[in-house]
Length: 121
Image (cartoon, rainbow, N blue to C red; front, side, top):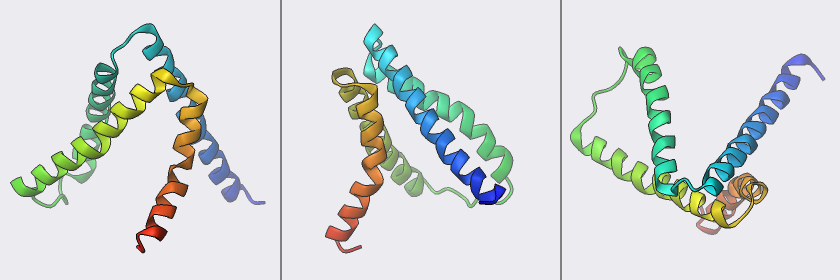
């Protein structure tokens, strides 16, 4: 096994450790009494504050123009797709353990594959 393939395994392990740490931190914050909706807002705000400067810096020159219709579609997709999912996940994390939440997150690619097979994509 060469060093390049070893790096890939280490990156996958690092991502899994980050997920596990995030779920434990989330569970601890929610057990203390932090509101789930406030927690999701902080999470989205932190991601925006971190990612927007990177996107502006790296893609300022070659970014295509953003029309109002495209912006509205992106807003609705992010509201329904990400925000609602994170709120449901945070509410579920109150009633279950962090290890179960991490295990469910690891099962998402399998569920996506099964849905794609069932819907013939």
